Length: 155
Image (cartoon, helix red, strand yellow):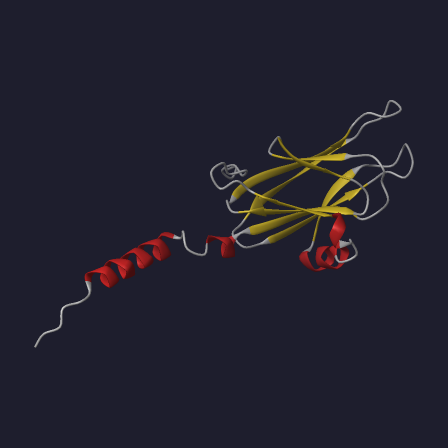
């Protein structure tokens, strides 16, 4: 007597493997994270933009942890609003690769002639610095998978 496969189970297995091989299953495990943080005291709002899209505002001793599912070019811009006739804007570029973590420190000016800078840190240094930021001051954001934030890499 020959046994025939249960058709419902057979179709369920096929669907599972189609979704698994398609990348729809477990897509989150291949995301990248961009950390933008202000390690020191700073009372003014700092606007964070990715490729000219506003992401959030942070202040001193705060961090943005942004999970990205796409790969490609990302321009990070940070800027302050004008106060007492002074405002600052700076940016950094990075090529986002699948599964990597990126750390960007915002150095805020202490004096009027000091610089407002956005600097990419090495992974080991960035990991140590973000541990100093309290969890209640971390903003978690996620890329909209239907509208990727990255652009194709520049040639």
